[in-house]
Image (cartoon, rainbow, N blue to C red):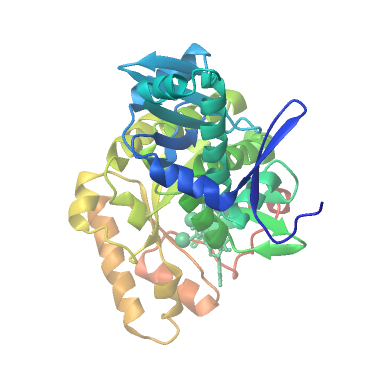
Length: 377
Ligand code: C2E
Ligand code: MG
Ligand code: MG
């Protein structure tokens, strides 16, 4: 009999399938107060969502052991990998629950596996509901040619020479480009940013290794989100990028927004990245909360002046005043400056005469394939 308009959650095992009304699944969860559950990224990655109290160290140990369940402190702990192997769902509940169930239904022994299986499947049901359709389809597109990188030239204002390029991710969904700030925000919210960033770094390595070998004075600047910079994986990822490509650290810059810069735990990551020899730039400078004090505490190499200040140069507005203040700040801290979003010659002239060394913007080139920058100017 066809069932339409009703959301069912299906658990299947071999030739058997159980249909659970989504409302029932929610009811089960809301009545089980002593059941903790959730999901995290495989390999001990960050928790994507969770409910109740659980021991994350025990979970990671269970994942590493290769087993799917164990008994600890009178609780049963179970884990299960998603079909794509990216997520691990977990459930933890008092063993007494199972024992009571066995007691109550003496004739029918309730297999622990069934209880665990159902609970874990419910977790995945909620996980996929939680992953909005945008981030779920981004995950599907990630390893296809619908997700790719474009590179925008960064030039030296005095000479017009192209000294590097910023890597910008692109996603073509149903033939239309989705703005990266939109899908990056969705990916961050859904907890899949580590997977997206991993792919971005792989794409950059793939696109640029040969180019950077031929042009050793050139660099590629990669954007990282605030979440990336709180994760220990980022340092490993960058170390991997250098060892796999065989390129020197000066071939890459790391960009992070000013908002991410002031978050806890970021300074340690930045120190490690700089210790490797990779330069760190604060993106969209002037729009967040990084003040002189923060810049004194956390050492960086470059400030990128946000486009909104550059836009005001033509109008001879206060934006120019802000730029002058940023320039003297950068000079006093020994930092280099890149102006973003330069569209007119007048802006470029003003920036050069004010002491800004580098710039990017449509005046110099739009984002495109790296090969379009074949001969650095
Ligand atoms: P962003 O890092 O500040 O990148 C600069 C943005 O300004 C880019 O937009 C670029 O195309 C645009 N732009 C450059 N010059 C001009 C100009 O002269 N005029 C105008 N109107 N726009 C200009 P895009 O590519 O849409 O990226 C938007 C934001 O999305 C980026 O801002 C960055 O925050 C984020 N993003 C892009 N790619 C990545 C990525 O690979 N990883 C991460 N974590 N974030 C990314
Ligand atoms: Mg950037
Ligand atoms: Mg920017």
